[in-house]
Length: 325
View 1 (cartoon, rainbow, N blue to C red):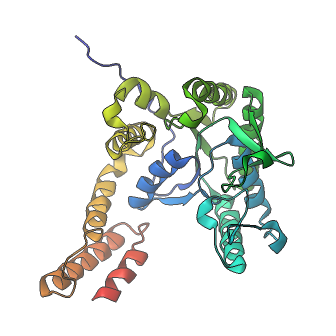
View 2 (view 1 turned 45 degrees about the vertical axis):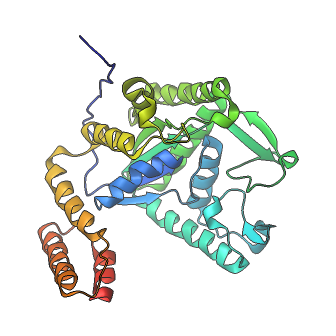
View 3 (view 1 turned 30 degrees about the vertical axis):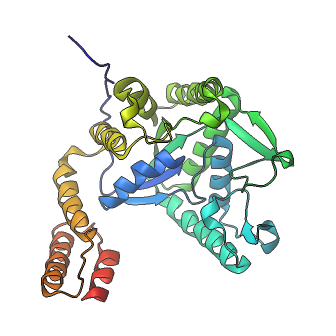
């Protein structure tokens, strides 16, 4: 007897390795996966403009990163004493205009360099519902009055055009043709209502599968189906009933590893994760002899791994440890 429906995962020939440079774009779910890749010390750049939910705003982000042109001061607007930009996530907000602008432009410059040599693009579409101001689809309304915006639903064709253009720009920017792993976010947008959420997801999914049929270097990872059809239980959702729990994300990431990660490097990832778990440990008494000894041992373990695998870089973690010794 079968008590659940499970997803049959394709295992692809072209796989992510420690030599791969990975660009992660899209919704908060794309960050969930990318953060786990970064935790294992893969080379990842995550959402240069912050969390981005729709295909049009992803395209806007990539156009800017490709040009590498800094934004002028007058591109920012002031909302509740904070300086913001409609194409950027709220995490870029700042009371100091120059600091807000500096953070934005630093991200543009960093992304401009990074996309010159990418191997993999992991892109997650969250919704087809968008908000326009003066004909421009915004990434974030920054809680401005709703009457300023025009709400609309992107059609499958509009999603297709935006995603295709995004891929064309990134292919042109990179020194090699990237692998595009497309996903549909399993996070439900209940604010639009259940029916409109499904309509929104469907419009994005049609575009994604059209691209997969058209291009050999575009594949689909079924994160949405894993949550809704495999896990299929409210215990795998947080209290808001929309976001997957950490347990669910771990399960999805395990599926992602099986489908897309280099199997020969699995043990390396486990060694790195063991060290990173120790690094995350917070001691009650940091100046105690036992904790100081623990930090020195951890520092030594990181150095051993760097020597064993020259592509690993624990410099940030080692700097943090050295400040505590």
